[in-house]
Every structure is written in C-alpha cells, then in structure tokens.
Image (cartoon, rainbow, N blue to C red; front, side):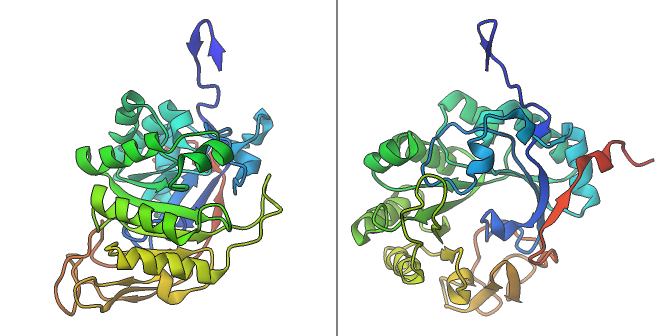
Length: 323
C-alpha cells in the first residue's frame, strides 16, 4: 500500500494461518527429508495466475483473511517447540511480505531453524538479494517456458524468473528445487518440456531437482480438465533423458515418480509414498549406501519423523518465551 509517497507493508505480523507440513509438501525432496516445516503466508500476490491453487489466500483483498498474528520471535519459538526443522514462507509469495519474512528468518536462524522461500521468483535484483540472503532453501515455481503463458495466464514475465534462477545457482548457497504445474493444453507439450529441461541442465546444472505436478480445475480455469498422470510421467521421462538427475511427479499417487534414486548406480535412496518416507538408503553423510555417490541437497544423518501429518497451529499459544 502507498502511504505518504512510500510503499508500506500493511500485513506485517499478520498471517492467513500457520500449519506444520511435511517438507515434501513444499515440495522439497532434498532438504531435510521427512522433517516438519512450519508454514505460513499473508494475503495478496504480485502475480495474477488464472489457475492459482491458493486463490482464496493469494487473491484476497479482505484484511479479515489474515486470521492469525505473530511476531518473528513467536514464529521461531513455535517452530522450535513443535520440533520443526525449518520455517517456510509460502501460500502466497514472500516477495510481497519481504520485510516480515526477513525479520522472521533472522529470528529463526537465531534459534537454529532453517528457512524456506516458496516463490514464483519474479523479483527485482535489489530486493532479491535482501530476501535470499536470509533463505536456506527455495522452491521456485517455473510456471512454463514461454513468455506468452506468463503474460496471458499469470500477468507476469518469464525472463525475470529465469534471471532469478541463474542468480540463485551462480551467486548464492541457497538450495533450489523447481516446480512446474502442468496444465493440459497450455504448458504440457513435449517441445516445451524438452526446451525447459534442457535449459535447466545447461543454465542451472543437472542436480537441480524438478517437480512436475498435476493441475486441478480451480479459480478462473475451471473449464480445463485435470492433468492425466501419464502427462507427469512423460514430463519426468523427458527431463531424465535430457540430463536432469532428479525429476519427480506430484499431486498424484506415484511411488516411483516421488522417490529419489542414485544417479550413479540407480539404487533407491529415498522411497516415498505421497509425503510418507518408505525407505532411506543414505549414509550419515548423504551418500548412497551402495556406491557412496553423493546425493546433492541438505541432509541430516537420519530422516525426520514428521511423516504426512498436517497440523494447524495457533501462534498465540507461543506468546511468551519459556522460562
């Protein structure tokens, strides 16, 4: 909001709600797998995606959408008390509540809690540096690989997102994974997926995980059918054939498409059934137990034990620090 010639963040300290999720729901498959992440967002968004899956929050102009309030210190206390390995700024894009996200990230780091940005990546260089200086991981929503899609369906632009991704890969230590929601007839052609995945390998590197997730009719695109599971499997195969070492399917039941395999010997490293871990074959240093090849990412010696639970949290229960 503009006030006195300045842009003012009116949602600072206010949230659309807090919830503990499995980290795989962000989705992040190589960032402390199996752990719980305290997730929250505010209201509004800097894009106007017609297919938004969180439209009731991200498109809201009603301040009463903001149902919970919390200081950065409360957020850190809650994450610690709930056994969360990280805090995620999600549901809407943290680029629009940057000051709140940065202050919360500082408090989390002081408490030994990692931080995650779930973002569309469309942000100018100066605030980008400020935001990601305080993030340990990011899932960036690469919505498509054409400017037409971004302009027509998102009210945004592709090139700034690509610039953010290259900058993250070359200039930061932030762990990055990508998500593309495949929408039938709009961004799911073999040609587009081929060009996208070749760009990822050439510009970001083969170790950046890619998640291909299923669209369901929502918001202003209720006339488009859901994504067939076969489309996700096809996209995953194209990615793997083009050199992406870790390609996943999401929003469908697909144990193979959701599991992590060693790119060196092909052994199963992390088995997943939805958000539940079913196997763990990494040693204490994040290497394949069979061939000792390193699995890129951020790993503890053992997986987390949050499982597939979703826990809604009232931050007012963490108003004061423990004695």
